[in-house]
Amino acid sequence: MSIAPPLLAARGLRFARNEQPVFGPLALEVDAGEALLVQGDNGAGKTTLLRVLAGLLRADHGDVEIDGQAADTSRRSRAIAYLGHLPALKADLSALENLHFLCGLHGRRKGQLPAHALALVGLAGYEDTLARQLSAGQKKRLSLARLWLSPAPLWLLDEPYANLDLEGINLVNRMVQAHLREGGAALLTTHGAYAAPPVRTRMLQLERAT
Ligand SMILES: Nc1ncnc2c1ncn2[C@@H]1O[C@H](COP(=O)(O)OP(=O)(O)OP(=O)(O)O)[C@@H](O)[C@H]1O
Image 1: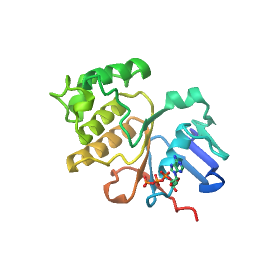
Image 2: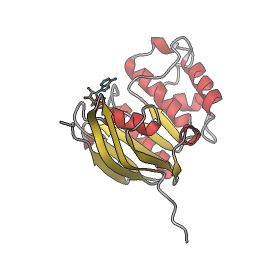
Image 3: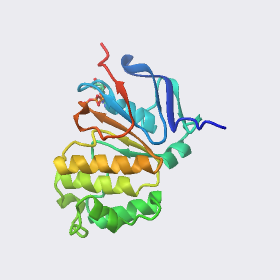
């Protein structure tokens, strides 16, 4: 019987800016079907860690593996869906056009359509609204629809609850639950565990480097 490698693993991961350590060395693993909750105070390095894992920043030391293989650019682009602080939306496209555009670029989750994803995140009726005319919370919801449509198994979610009302927080948790049930995994950064989804969860506490 073979044991599958973790969906995401990092070892000896360290990042510094101008020779000032931000985090590490640290190790982490996330299996399919699991969440990893990355906790820490403001400035502890949560966003930096997610950007390093996503390949948007280069670590000073350490290895990142996806499915047991070195995380090169093509493996990352197939495996990772990244939800950052800022909604990566096209301001002058409508909500629905944004989703079609992104599905054209990255493909989409089996059996899911942009219009259904909009309804899922509570934006039915906003199909033709330009992204720049949406509120901060609605933009976040549109980014969540985009995340839901992504075929990537590994979600890197930076402060996914920010700007969301209680119903939106529950929506994120339902999405994470459903994604994990389908064999995906998710890393979530948060300031506290209060909003974490009820799934198999590992914890990683980051301390601000001194
Ligand atoms: N672009 C940047 N240039 C220089 N320093 C930066 C930059 N971005 C972040 N930092 C610094 O790196 C450290 C970690 O920042 P990071 O954004 O990763 O923390 P965080 O845990 O995500 O914080 P928050 O909870 O406030 O979002 C902080 O000391 C911050 O000042």
